[in-house]
Length: 292
Length: 325
Image 1 (spheres, each protein chain N blue to C red):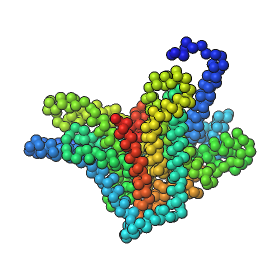
Image 2: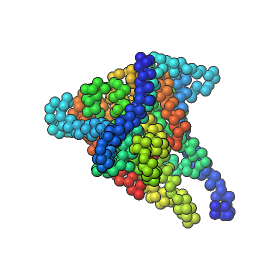
Image 3: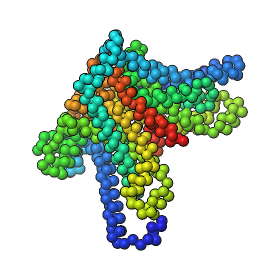
Image 4: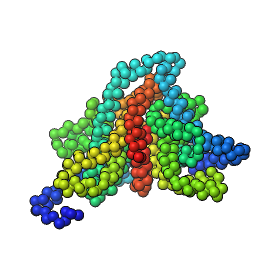
């Protein structure tokens, strides 16, 4: 702005150009450090097993090119990854929908209904954000054992739902609580019931908050290892991908043709979501920075 | 089997939302049967928060109390043992090394993620391809710690000197300096603990960067322009203006990272499972629980985590509340 009128000396310009250059080099180096590990995995996953084990992945670009889909076929058919992919979906979708709907219902009551102890109860919900999952594992596992819910989808749906609730209620109460009061007043005048107001008014207007929350919770459940390990541990037929991969790491320590393709299969969906819905994802992460 | 899966999918996608909305509908019909407007208003809110509170009580409140009780009992919870489990976790050699490692993680990882995150936020603020550069660094946040563990195990792969290195780290260092001795990064203490930390830093720096970058954008341009007019150089501006105005964001990011790092589990579990001196508290808890079936000790370790997290979280919530005005 003001700088354009100031005539800069030649040496100043050179210093500026030089520091620009350094800036770009530093940023590119950082980006490379962050990108190369994933790139190496990605390229390796398409190389034949004997080449992965004997030459570096960067040699893949030497002619003759030798790429194959064999690793993917193998890992999907023999290493339980195909089944695990479906399991991950079967676990993550309900474990995303359930907490969000239940939290939205509770958040609506917290925002627009009067009842004694409302603020104390909400404070308790926020306080529960502190609880590390580890504090709940043993009692819940014992409970699940008694109810025969260990190793079942229903068990892990409920567990993820409960664990996701404090954050979901906290976030949605902040959003639903700030909707304009006039909107509810006019709906009340029209004689709309709470059910109608909730389904026709609150849920549609909360879509931005709901979608950020949905992405956050979905990624959380999709990528979760600990909860699956504890409650589904012994049952490979219901194992989601992180669990199957961690078992693969144990059994095929150096079987990189399995591990690279398996890891990449588990990354496809999060990466697609990340690049297509980055805005919502970032918003969820920003809001989620207080999650315990 | 097939039918089973399809049935589950239908329940998952259609059944669950219908069930929850059905509950509210039935609750509302029930409320409408109650006579007296006042009574109705009194009962309705409780029916709306009931599903949430039922789950919170069963899955969070009751387990916390139960875990504290179990931590005072023996391995199979049949006998009261007082503070014996707590004495164990602060005297046992492996536990002490896990605690020491966790403290090391806390200092090193928090420092690195926050500093590098801030550095990248400040640097990318000055370039045109900012969003592309940031996407590269943020991407690891989207993938699981297990996948990140596999990615980095492959990076660290070791072959004896003379053989072609397939691990990027050893290959790079050998190429840069031919006299470099390839290392088994995950097997040699204490370097293996740091090798694990690098993975965690790789995952979480993007998170710090995104939040710090949002804070940075909040600093008014006029403030920076005025300082530049007064002849302040970029270095002074960074320390005298950017850091002080962003202090509350930096504290939120730091406390969040401290809490994350305290609970670090997946990366360690997948890459070394705490062997060869890389043990951490949360992984130890898993082992006490699943491998040794000692619920008393496992509970005591969980309580230790909770007690360590509470003060940090209080700072976070307080700060966050201030941020909201």
